[in-house]
Structure formats: structure tokens, C-alpha cells
Length: 215
Image 1 (cartoon, helix red, strand yellow):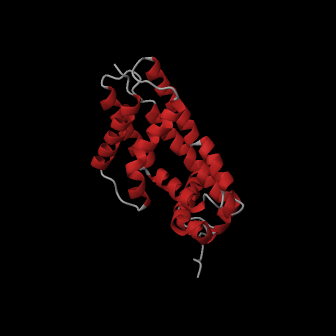
Image 2 (cartoon, helix red, strand yellow):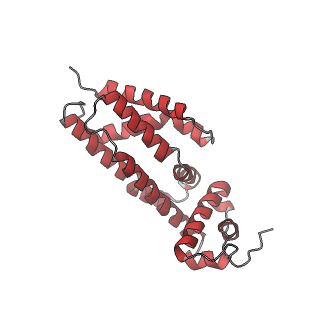
Image 3 (cartoon, helix red, strand yellow):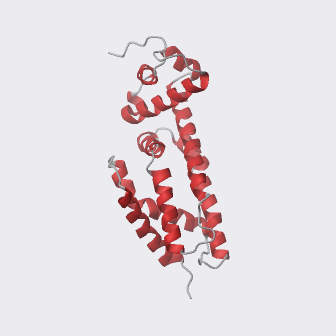
């Protein structure tokens, strides 16, 4: 039996606060129940708002899914570009500095709550909504790849690396740094700081075997 939804069940909140609570609630419910199993009543109950409040902000469940993916993508981008700002453009120790960067990237972009939400939504709903997740790819990962590629190109220009295709190098770096973590994350394992450090160190060693400058 669906829950009985009273008018908003939390103290009065502004438009922005209600919108945030609905996005968070919808992400939680979509990830837990899947799109087919989720419904507006469940999302309203999770958010502490009325059913009508959800409809006033989002006309249907599909529109709410689109809003969730776009909102979380924007937040993930903000964190990713914050980490990219710490990229070692002038390394003291290239391997150590790239490893520390990879750890920050994994900790703040792959293993955080928003990263988990996007990964689960993509796994569950990517085939059903290819256009939505194509838009996510262009406005999320592709922007990060481009920015990271530019930084690797600068390292190569400065003589630290030998790279013919910075775009490919950026994608490979991201794939390597996350490869040991993806499966545990899919199964919901909690990763320790030691797990992140070891996975990042292995990835950077492999990356540098391919791209480090040959003396």
C-alpha cells in the first residue's frame, strides 16, 4: 500500500530547499527501487513534502529523473574541476605528485555519494534512457577528459611526458585510476584510504611506464 502523504511534513522551507530535498530524495529512491519501482509518493515521503509539491516542481517521474541526473552531474563536475585545479603542472616528483592527484580524484569524484548515485543510475537506466545518459556523458565525463587532456599536453610540452594523443592519455589515466575500485563500488563495498592509495599508486606506475619521458 502506498504511503499516505500529508501536506509537507517538515518545517516551512524555501523553494531552493524544497527543490534540493526532492532531488536528493528522488536520487535515493531511484537508486534503491529502480526507475520502474519508484513512484512519486515514495519520493514525496522521502523528501518530506506533499505529492502535489513534487508535481508542482516536476510534471512527472521521467522529468524528475532528468532533473536528478543533470543536478548530480553539475555537482560532480564542480568537484572534478576543483580537483583538476590541483593537478601537478610543475611537479617536484612526477610519480608521487600524480599519485596524490589520482587519490584526490578517486576520493572526491568516484567514491563520493554523488558518484555512487550516477554509477547506479547509469547501470540501471542507461539502456532505457540512452539520450539522457548520452547528454550526461557529453556534459560530465567528456568535459573532465578534455580538461585533463590539456594538462597532460602541458606536461608533455614541458618535457615530463611523451604523449602523442593527450585525449587518449587522459581517458587511459582515468580508466587506470578507477579500474581496481569499480567492482568493489558496484557491490557497495566501503573502500579505505589504503585501498585508494594502493589503487592510485598502481595506476600511476602503469601510466608512467607508457608515457614517462625516455632519457
